[in-house]
Length: 411
Image (cartoon, rainbow, N blue to C red; front, side, top):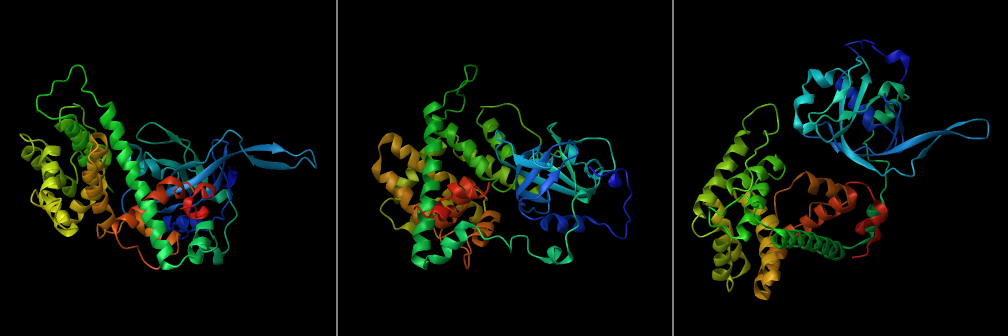
């Protein structure tokens, strides 16, 4: 840490947070970032811009490096620690280190995935602590060479060519479609396997009595449905609410943010969840959905999808969120039950609806991966969109290009 920046007060006219952000994006890949705790991070990937709420930078990738001295000319060198793995997390950017507490990030669970506090000026001896108690290392960008003005103007990814990009450019439209559909089916299989595992291992706690008359299918489905209502928002809180409503847990975490009440959109979706659970109280959630699958089995895909949409839309859920629930929760769950019960027709029905679903709303991941893979536009159909999610979650998020199916083109 340079002594020049310790406890220094920046000139207000010269330093603003957007300047610090620009300096972050201008850092070359592989840059060594000295930390205030004496360690060094190597920047493998600078991440993606965050949204309006939460950390400034999402999904940055680092590696811990260790210092040693070369026997030749006693040079100071750095090397990746043989025991360290890549670190994946968020970055919060401020002009001063003290801004972390000033902005109350230390009490906000939305910042509990931050792994680095990037600042210009280290103006406090107080540590940067997350809401969960984790101490975050601080890097002063003032300790790094000031990037040339040209670098500050460049797009952060303009100079990087990833292996997947070269391969995707060589594919024609049909090859890209088949590739993304296969990746989407792999994501479907993942979700199906996860539900099968939950159903296999589910057991009511010894102190818990089944007062609601739910089957184990309902106990596994309803918390997943609750979590699906919050995709892109406060998933942990919604899943906890789902467990609470079916009597599996009596504790509820505080909603994300600085308020003790959920945001209006979250409150509306919680009302939908309560409405659905009340409707399914006597017959059961899965029994209702199974009857719907059976009743529409001989209809075309559009009619089957419309019947499922009606269940959720009539409870007050938007069409876009209903489709998200159907693709990510209902269809994989139906396929899991079908495999457990050896119901081949139900499995084919669920998988066909997944493959032929016309598409979900664009989101942060589909937009990121459309750019990452150099696609002209986001792919059509939910299966291909889910393929983008699969590639991102499996390897692209951590930038493990050597393991990536897109880089290897082995699908």
